[in-house]
Image (tube, rainbow, N blue to C red; front, side, top):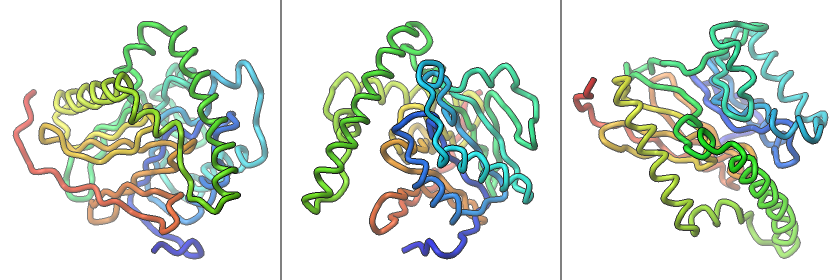
Length: 267
């Protein structure tokens, strides 16, 4: 079990889909996590600030500001921070290649793990046909997701009152709705093909809020999950091991990301 009172030093930290600026963002849990984990390099893998929601409703409590300040503090202490914008913070894509306050903005990035694997880092929304081709439908889906998260909060309160563990309605619905399952599968396959095109051994993304670690077509696929319902992140240790961390699990369960077998990658 991880000890929340001590720092855990890792080589690289990957977090995405914080959705700062929304009521669903679990900023307090995120603050708890980034206080424990100290990393030489931090990748913010998109949808860190929810520009879509802030345009319609301004919601920015102190905890959200504390997250931003904590990340800036890590940069001042020497951490390298790379921000790969997503669709909800797409306004930052205009500044790809620039550095602000020590934070590097990149459309996507290549990272070399300590054990020599090439990793492609991207948010993943460009493989979401709804976001690309029907923005109005994506916005409608975003509202439906907000409703699911609102329902989650009430369900969580009721379950706590009866002494039951946390259960996510939105995560459950993703697994049960056939179209959602098919979409996730197609998304994962498209991301893996992009990794193969870049001759990468590993690909890491966010966007679909489904924490995952699996090997497909000789590529290790990692999805960082989110900080709205799953509260997950990926860490790289100093020997190159990659782990998917579930922060809300009562035992702070850590799932090891298995090392993929080396296979020739087509150009």
